[in-house]
Each structure stands twice: as structure tokens, then as C-alpha cells.
Image (spheres, rainbow, N blue to C red):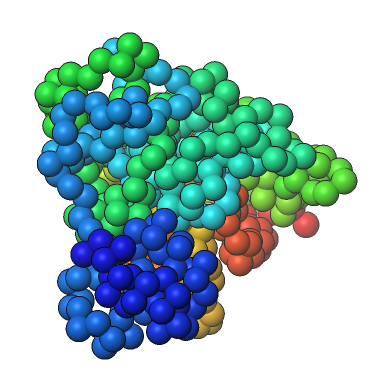
Length: 456
């Protein structure tokens, strides 16, 4: 049932506000969002005699016309046949620039620039659940990679001009420069529910300069896209050659001045790393050498590392194991301290003998609760992953250390045989809370205890 009808059954805006004990402005926001918060459903059912199904948000109408309606100039097509019309922004689509990939949603309320440049989003279209996307513009310091990695973005409201002193460029111009397409005017609340309830699927965002839409041909492209399962994208987003990283975490006043104290010689394997991970490693005293995803164990060991870091990255971890796992097994046997994040966590699990699987619903956003099984403490974490480690597949000499409190999936492991541990989430945040920054210090302590080249 539509929101206006429900409000009418309650007696209008003022009476609805009185019954549900909210302001009339809140009722107007219900109308704007086309949904009523579930905490009010019991009261409304009691007052009106409506049923629970009457209060559920309307499903996306799959009978949306195949011809572009007035006022629209872009379309979002889902693998299940759903067609959503909207207003395009950023770069125009073309034969050589099609925004096609797996559609997902992010619940972060800040950090759209960091999200779009996170290499873990390679091969994905991002639906932002927070409405105010673009309001702080963009700047060079907030990039998590040297370019936008996501395939495209879907937002509810039109992108406004930026209003922030750090902004150097608008989101609109930034997207155009990097040849990335966006669409607004989409009911992101209902789209998010569809993704949540029906799982990940392929999607295509199309914003043609000539305004011509061949829907049948576009739908065929969506159905032909192979999906992320079995896909290796780490090779596409890794660095081209080894390099040194020197910048620390941004601090008010001195920005990203390099830290003078270098205590640990660390090699970071870049499977699609975020810059803020490197900055946090610098903060705990790491002299950091970053190497490509395909680097051999021999080359890694030639740097005489006190520890090895395994970065985040995109797509299916199992698709990379033929070249990553042999390297990690050799490093483990050398008893080099290892710390992994996200894809690095999943690859460490494979190297220890475990397995991974694709989640029915991935975790993406900066509000994911994770419990430390040893201390019982709960951390609010930043996450971005569609695959997870199967804790039941771990060998007897490895154990789970953290779990996700939303769905009980694995969020961390540690080896009882080797000096190695990893987490599924992002302790470096950016965007997100800093509850988990302590893990970088834990890595430093592990190197103090087990580094074969320990510095006194």
C-alpha cells in the first residue's frame, strides 16, 4: 500500500503524527522516502486494521516501460529484468565505456570518494543508501587509489555543488575526468531492499549522449556478464612494480608528513590495497615496500622483511589461489610474521588449508558490528566484501578470532602454528570508525616476538 493511503487511513498528517508520537515533519519525510520506519508498524496496524504486508515498502515495478519516460536520460538494468529510469551524471556511456558489473549497496554515511576509489569495489556498481552524495566535493587527499575503481554509482538525489573548504573539484567533474557514470533519481531504498532480499546480481548503468536506448541489447549484455564468482581482478588493480611508501596518517596541521622512526621492515603485497592501510603501517613504524600481487616468495624474502602484509582486494579469492597461495605457504614455512586484511584474510585462510564462499549478501559500509571472541569486545567496523572464510574448513592448528554480529560469518582467524593472523574487515577505515586501529600495533608486536630479522 502506498504511503499517502496509509497516512490517509490514520486521519491525515497531523493525526498520523499524534498517533505515532512523531512530528509532522517526520510524516512528511515518510512521504518523501515512500516508507514508514518499522518501529511504528505495530501502532499503525492497531489503529487502522492494516496488515504487515500493507506496510512493507512497495517492490520495484518490473513493468517499467522500455521507452525512456519524460525527464529521464539514463537507465539502470538488473539481471532479473528490472528497468529503472533516472537522470545520468558524470561521463556518458559508450561502446568502450559501459558501466556493467555486480550491483551492491554501501551503508556508509560519509566517505563516498574513499569508497569509489577503494580497489575492492572493482567490478561493482555502488548504490549509496545515504542521500547526500557529492555535497562535500572531492579532493586529492581522500583518494584510496590513484583513480576511481568502481564501475559506477547510483544515488537518490541530484548531485549538488560542493560546500566544503577541503573541496578542490565537484563530484560531477571528477567523474567526467575519470570516465565514470552515475545515475540519480532512483528509489535507492527499494533498490537496496531488492539487493538485500534477492542477493547480488549483474547490472548495467547506461547514460547515452544521443539519448537512444536499445533496451533489448542492453539486457542481453547484462545477462552475458559472467559475475564476480570465479573472477580474478587482483591482477588488474595491483601496482605495476615494487615501490616504497612513506606517507603516514593525515594529521591536522602537518597533513601527511612522513614519520621519522622506522623500526620494522615490512613488505606489503598489493592485491588492490587502500592507501590508508599503508599510512597506518607507517604510523606503527614500518619501513614499507609495496610489491605487485604476482611477486614471488623469493623476491619478497630478498627484502629481508620483519613481516609481510596481505592487502585487501576485489573479486573471488579462490580465483587467485594458483599464484598467491604457493607464495604464502612458503612465507609461512619461513615463519615470517603475516597480517592480512579482507582479501588478504581470505588468501591466508586458503594458504592455511581453509576455504572461502560467496555470501548471499555482502558486507559493505562503516557500521558493521564485529565481536572479538577472545576479549568479548565489540568493534564497529568498516567493511567491503562479498566472499567469506568458512571457519569449519580451517585446519586444527588455526582458529576463528572474530565473528560478524549481523550474520555470524567469520571476521578473523589466527594460526596456532605460524605467527600469522588476519581480519575480514578494514581496521584502517577511511571511511569509518577507528575502533580497530589497534590491529596495526598487534602486527608490530607480532614482529617484535617472531621476526627473523628482529631489531633490538
